[in-house]
Length: 328
Ligand code: CP
Image 1 (cartoon, protein in one colour):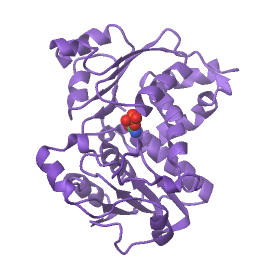
Image 2: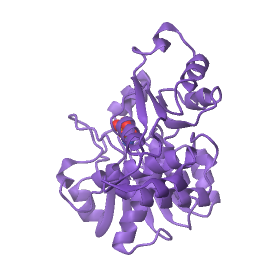
Image 3: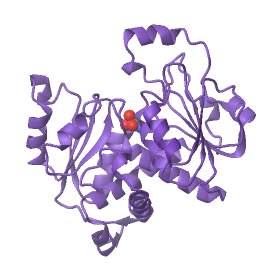
Image 4: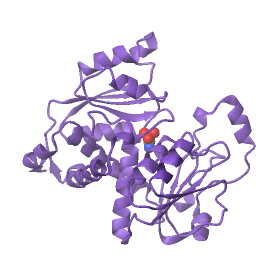
């Protein structure tokens, strides 16, 4: 793995498997059954120039669980970028203050540009419609854990990715990670104009997976092992797109009726969250709350050990953690 985590493109199957094994070792620390101070004295710069709850707070908590300290900046208003400071200068300055940096920014490629100017590890916490590699790692970790509980294998699994597959960065990273594994069947369902980028589909197909694209959840498919739905990212729409999307009458909601029609008792339902709870939103219905197949909060819990594993490997302390462990 390179010294940064900017895209899942830098990860091999071996790297991913190693990270997930380290994440499993982090679980007792994430749940505070054991403690470590292995990153005592280390400082994380948590720079979020776009809204976030999960990614910002869970990276913060993961670094603290390893004994480190976190400096946060949220939004452009309270950073000197509001005064015209460049990504380059911000990066050079922050790398003098921090041992690692997590950054979220609305422009695709901006986190890589920031990382090029620093000597400390940088983690992409989401760059516009680009990628969200740590979310994909925790999503894959969740699928592995859920499949292990259910006695299923990833090989041959039927995975549905639905919602905004154009601007939803989590699905770009996740489908590429899944493609590192043995052949599976992946069905993509999105509203017109919000399809998965073709270069991503081409990559996945070239790795031996069967990919089908549909424009409706009412299509004829069944026996889903995973339903992964995403929010429509209206904040990334142009005015023209907002107008054309307003005319889409089809329903892309994953709800109890959909599960009853298309899924089994062992299908798991995932979403990177946030789900949109405003009137007219159509990603994941609350009528599934309480259904054991709904894995969304197990998924968010998995964010802590996975992000601890990312820090442990990038900062090369994973072997020190074992020696430093102590009871609460
Ligand atoms: N999944 C995710 O990135 O959530 P936040 O936007 O709350 O960080």
